Image (cartoon, rainbow, N blue to C red; front, side, top):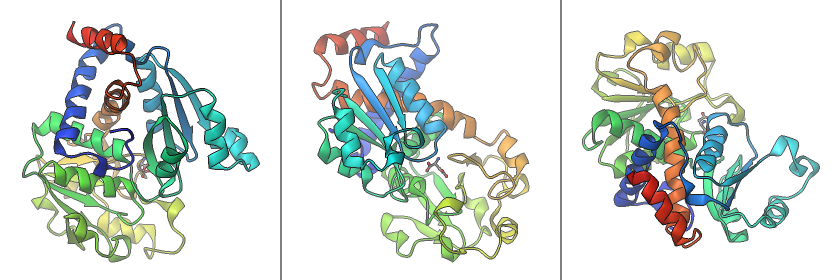
Length: 315
Ligand code: ASP
């Protein structure tokens, strides 16, 4: 695999290989020295055209823990604001001979375009409403740590599915790992034909107790060009997941950032059933594993560096 643009780039075995690798990086993350010398001398470029806290910081930390040199470019402080096109920006950054380019863009398909314009491995860190594959991998990692396996787990994805790249990548990843996925939200926020991805659809939370895992999505105001719900108050009344709506034993997830009091109540966020901080923690090791998978396996990294990294992991 040269790039990670979509969960469709991975079969179940590929997902498992990345998550096993992430688990070994998690073990290193518990040590005093958290670095692995795999990408020494290589450059990773993070190119973010959209706001991000978790994804950009965890990719940066992941590349640094693999000993890479990291350049982080944000659209609001780069020549992008002066009108430089994406293609020109990639040509400019290619002068640094990056081993990998991590890109977040408001446009669906942007990561795939970048992969045609560069020799570097490209990682899609979220492209518009399309996909966010590393989020899905860290979600599977978090659930696997908790449940052992996803086979047969009933996962409900609740909220603004229409504008959610996380929902699309999660449906693909969760079903590939053997889970049963149901999406739930007001009909205006559920894309028509979503069942084709292998999930069921529920219009209300009435049967939420059937879920083992409740995965709540953020209302994506920035992508809404019209009124999809009568009001946020009414949305919250019908679809907010509050502590009282969760049955004991159900797990709660959210990709962040959370609109407190809209899709989730404050008590639900802080309840022991919530795995939200575990998801953030998983972000670094899963993104390390993705960069490692793309670069160490492809000849982009000298064999001696791979051997040294393997020795650190085995020590
Ligand atoms: N952080 C996730 C994303 O970038 C989820 C969200 O923004 O709602 O897609």
